[in-house]
Length: 169
Image (tube, rainbow, N blue to C red):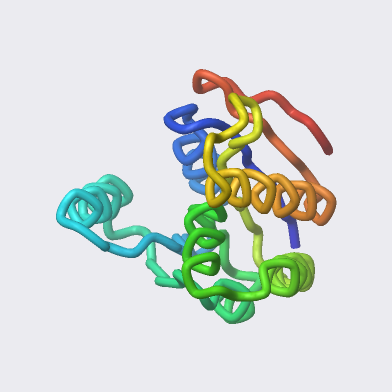
């Protein structure tokens, strides 16, 4: 088992980095664990584009809410990219879930997984303080979630302008 937490801003190159790293694990089944939901046409097109970019060599598991359960299905023969935790968090916020419990369950599932994992999240706390309560809550919850994932991870990498900066491991 190996857990790499990949953090970065929007369009920082974090997904490209994780996919390249995962691709380098020869002999393993490549799995994309996707948390996005196609709520509108633009997002549906984005999902189709990402699937086409990965190609047929990747198996896709859809886990917009049940991410811990999806991770639990992975085996030692798998290398998986989980993309992304901030969408997963948004899905749970909209479902009025207990976010601390869901985050703890996910961290435990990731640590217990025999798979090689690359888990992606957005860094959202480096900008200005949002002007509304929902956005401030999201920023706070994402920060706490990211701290929990970094603590659980063997490695943590911040991707800035396409360049990986090793934070841990």
